[in-house]
Amino acid sequence: MSNETPNAPVGLGPVRTDIIRACKDAGRDPADVTLIAVSKTFPADAIEPVIDAGQRVFGENRVQEAKSKWPPLLERYPGISLHLIGPLQSNKAKEAVALFDAIHAVDRPSLCEALGKEIAKQGRTPLLFAEINTGAEPQKAGVLPQDADAFLAACRERYGLTMSGLMCIPPQNEAPAPHFALTAKIARRNGLAQLSMGMSADFATAIALGATHVRIGSAIFGGRH
Image (cartoon, rainbow, N blue to C red; front, top):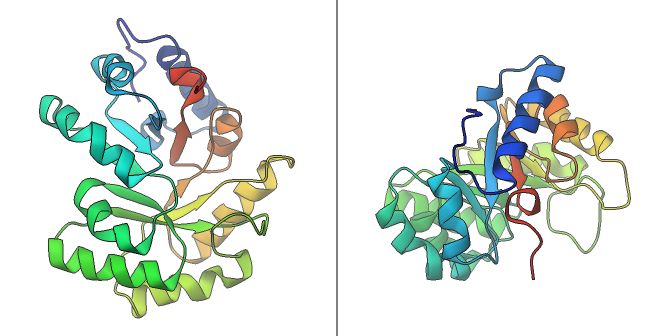
């Protein structure tokens, strides 16, 4: 991760500096941590200064929103990697596989089946992260921790998916560290090297516990309206 951000928007430079500091404190190489700038709800004119400052990995929550604003940006700026970090409906799998380079919320058999078909049909191979509902929150998507091993085995064996890692979003009212540690433990025993965890408020803790992808929006772009 480079800390050289000439003319960077307010927020991007400090976030990069904080990531480098967190990696140093954890004894990790900053190059092993990917910053995903979460651009959901922000228009193209708010995203372009961040691209111009050198950021090339962005996260969106919804397929339709990404389809409406990113194709022109992708034409103008080569080398951008788009990550879908929000929930994905099975009937949007075709569009998601076509547009995104990573999908962070693989969480149920019907979606696995749809993704497997589209990946085979389109010949694209997005990074796939299984979402783990570490807090067993009923309002959240994700696989329960006790079901994670069986789910990952089914992803590979039944649906032919190549899984890259795990993603989690800790409960808002709980310390994030135990949730990050649990996700990392599940990943290790399933041979998965990538961990999508940590947002603006807790990414330093996530990096200390092994995050390879941190999803940061408000600290870069400011508050959403």
